Image (cartoon, rainbow, N blue to C red):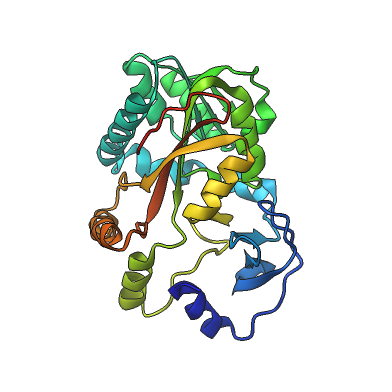
Length: 299
């Protein structure tokens, strides 16, 4: 068990088995890692260690969490910082792609990443469950953004040279289904880039406990960011392989906007090099279709 599991055990008392089935390995045994408000629990699978919220919130509840108010800081005071972040991530995409062709950004939010990619010669498209984000991207930026989950849109097979999911997979109700759909719509020599929060962000957990005086929680229905699944390097790799991808590289996601988290990330990256573990706040993974190119890539 990692530090957070020990802390949660002390906070919630005796762990009870949970009958929820893990979408990653099919295991039905697990422990309740957190008891949450609203009748929700965070369950950790006994088979693969994937953590997930059970029961899952409704689609209407999730879509309602991402209204105009959610995006307001992105469009105003955070815009310049977010633009720098997206430019760095665009550099990553350009370095891993064979060509600047068709690009799909899943969970594209306000569309800024797609706008920057279009300016550099990509042919972008996006998806988002938020009615506001979809309308904003189409109306204000002139981008082809589709409202809904990726597996609801119905793109043709092998449409895209690149698919990106920047801190999106943890918000979806079925990450495996989303990844399988990405596998279907990506070209055989295409690239997939995924960034997700790291369940083993030990340094951030310690810092949070020191500052707040309590353990970092994984889910609350009133959170600004509703994370339904929690991955580490093992489980995100398993998810990608289950969906038909070959993982080419796993590394730290350094594209964080908040200054304090950026500092922690640099410290965690240095500590991780010494210990040969990834303990940064988030992970960045690039992958290719399993029957595609055999190139070795690093994030």
